[in-house]
Amino acid sequence: MNKKVLFLSTLALTGALFVGCSEAPNNETYVETTSDLLVYARDAGTGGILTNAQVTLLSIDKAPRAVDAVGNVTYNNLPVGDGYSVRVEADGYATVICTGSIKPIAAENISIVPNLVLQAELSKLGASVQGSIVYQNPATTDIELLPATDAKVELRLSDNSGGCSFEKKDFHGTVTADGSYKLDSLPENTSYILYALPAAFGDVNFANFTIPSLKTGLVGSTVTNKQESYSNLANAIEFRIISASSEIGTADSAKYTFSKAVNIEKVWLNPIEVHIGNAKVAVTTVWSSDKKNLAIVPVSGTWEAGNKYRIVIPELISDEASSQKLVNDGDYYVDISTVDLSNSQVTGVSYNSTTTALQWKKLDGATEYHIYYKPSTATVYTFIYPAPSGVCNRDGDCSYNIAVNPGASYIIAGYNSRGLSTFSAPATIPVVN
Image 1 (cartoon, helix red, strand yellow):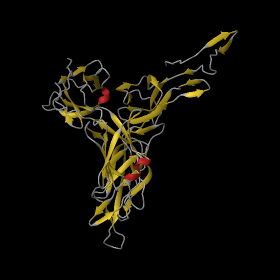
Image 2 (cartoon, rainbow, N blue to C red; image 1 turned 45 degrees about the vertical axis):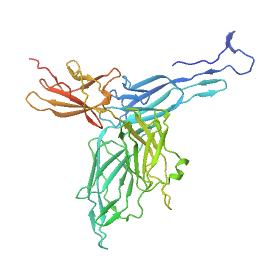
Image 3 (cartoon, rainbow, N blue to C red; image 1 turned 60 degrees about the vertical axis):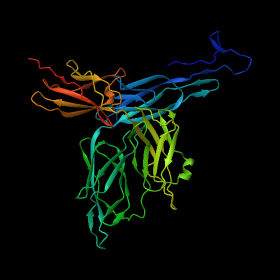
Image 4 (cartoon, helix red, strand yellow; image 1 turned 30 degrees about the horizontal axis):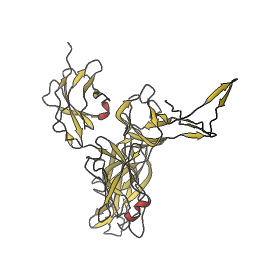
C-alpha cells in the first residue's frame, strides 16, 4: 500500500524518536490518503472458499477479476472515499453487491487509512418455494374458498450480511388455476417476504397482503408455505413500487411505477439518489401528472453504456390522508445496455483441447454470450449455455469450459436486452482416432 507523507520530520537520538519542531507547533503530520480494498468470496452455507468467483469494482475497474486460491481479490491504492461497490459472482450462486467506505482514522497529528475488507457470502441457487392462495367468494356469506387464479406474487429477498445485498432481489410468479404458485432458482437458506399483489376476481377487487419472515430451504428442496387467503377488499391497497426498470439504454429513463400517488412535495426531505460506484450522479426526476410514475434521467442526457447504476428510492409517503409509507424502498439496480448487436459478430471462436474450453473475443455491448451446439450426427444447432460477460478478461479474451464431445460443433452469439448478434463461425471439437 502506498502512503503519502505530507510532512514528517524526525530525529533519532540515543534510541529515542524525537519529532522535529517548526515555527508552528504540532504541524508535523503523517497522513495516509490511500488504502487497499480486499474482497473475499465464500460459500454462505459452508464458509468454503469460492475459487471460481469473480469480482468487479463497479465504475472504476469494469473488468471482472478472478479470485486467487484463497478466494480473494485485492485492489491497491484506492483513495479515501465513500461507497466503494463490488459485484461478486460465481456460477451456480446468487450474485451480490457489496459496499463499503475507505475512511481515515486520525489521532493527534497522525492519520492512517485501514484496509477495507468486504466478506462476500454467496448463496447457492436452486431452492424452490411453493404454496397456495385462495379468496373468499364474495357472492356468499358462507365460507367458500376459491383458487386465486392469475393473482401475482412477488418474493423479495432480505439483504444478506456483511454490507452485501443480492443483485437480484425480486422474483415473480402467477397463481395457477388450482390456486398454487411456485418460484424456482432461489438462493438457499435465505429469508424473504412474500407479497400477494392486488387482484380482481369477477367484479370484486381485493387488496394485497404480505407474508413476512419466510425462508428458503437447501438447493434441490421445495419449501411449502401454508395456504393464504385474500380477505380484504381493495380499500386498503399497500403503497409500494409495482414495476421498476432493470435494464435500459443510454438515452432511456429509469422508470418506476407506484401503487398509489406519491407525495412529491415532500420528496426533497429524503431525496432520490443515483450512484455509480462511490460517486453520486446528477439526475433529473420527472413525475407523471397522477404522481404514480417516476422517470429518472441523467442531467447530461445519457447514461454511460455498460455500467450498473444504483438507484436509492427512499421511504416515500403516499399522497393521501393516511400518508402510507412505501414498503419496498431501498436500492434498485439498473444495467445500461444500449449497443445494437444485430450487425456485430462474435469472432475468434476456437476449441482449446488442453483446457477443454471454448475461446472467443469479447463483443462490446454483450451482457451474455449464448452458446449453441450441434453434435456430429445432427443438422441444426440448439441452445445449451448462457455464459455471463464475466467469462471475458480485461484483455478481451473469453473462455468457457464445456463437456468434451468429439465431432460436435459450437457457435456463439452475443446477447443484450436488444437481442442477439450475428452468430460466429463454428468451432469443432476434433475426433481423435
